[in-house]
Image (cartoon, rainbow, N blue to C red; front, top):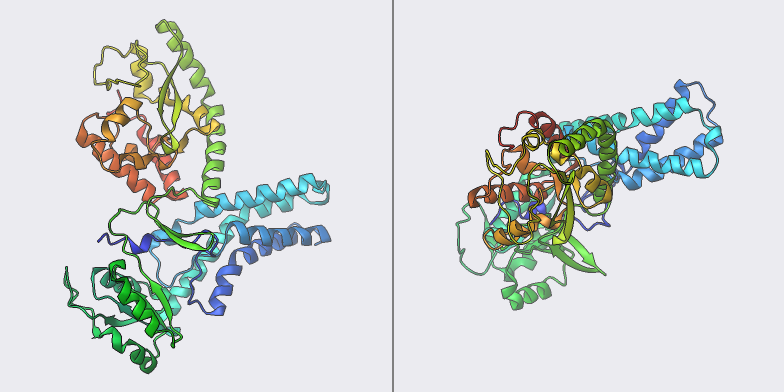
Length: 478
């Protein structure tokens, strides 16, 4: 079974992120109030530093900031054990989310005609310093959490029904994350272990003895990892536990699929498990879209002289149009029109047939070879980003004929279309640019799916920075 299966199941969108069912009240309050409290404290500090009286309009702004921050940034993801990358990788996400809060408050102030009541120095100082204060507060609190350690807090005892591979993986996950404060005592099962051995799992007995064991050992949680094929046994087990107060969880076996953004969700109160889903939902989707618009707008302004020169170069060196438009697959497999500066003597739509460009291709013009080598030919796709058909970062779109060819040969090929295609992507910065053979395409798809599984705003920023460094030295561009 994929070792990340259980770890990749997320809470419903409406749940408070970062808060677990077993958090003490003090920890729950800390996680929930850390960000909004720091944000309002930064406002008070900015008012004090600028020597401005804390009038009622600043009090109103503090209340609005508290509410907006608690909603947009949600809870602080504090753990008792966290990697260095997790500790340092949240600054970009916090900054973008804070900019959303600032934009909301600025719009509210402007629409309410209250701008003249605030000192610009206070607002600028507050907006500029708060994201760093939020990140430092999270970092400092995280370090305190790690120094305290989870063992000092009470743990909840748990047993697992099903001494199988899924149960073994669940036990390991519980032991690896002290922040859960759940102590797995062992397994109950009425059948010999099948499949891979579970040498470290303690078999406590048969399910018939579970109720008595729960009372005697003060067990608080029961996890059921039996497959649904054993439905009658599961019902019998649940019936036997009706007289206890334990929390009961059913652990679905989703090992049949390689999860893409797997999470638990609710459909009008009915729990469902996402096996293949886009990572861009809720605030994530809004954040990525706002970043796309902001960065693409700035990039267009900065690149406009280069684009004008490129357009002039295409017009003067070859007959025909300046912009090449090609139909490709976008989000959810819908057709989109992708814009590029024309670099070839032909304009293949790629609907039915497509011939991959190779080194020394005679179809590529002399000026076209230059703009392809420097990736200048891709700059018109910034307009695709602004119109919403593409993103700055995502799987590169292929011609329709290429899609139709490889979707039949590569498992999971079309899953890459769960997100908008990008101007650059994880595959491109990892050397998987170009190549029309099956192994090259398989590698590209693997990296695209890896991006979907592990997306974060910080990853997007890293890809953009690596793209900027690679663009002039990419020998695979031709």
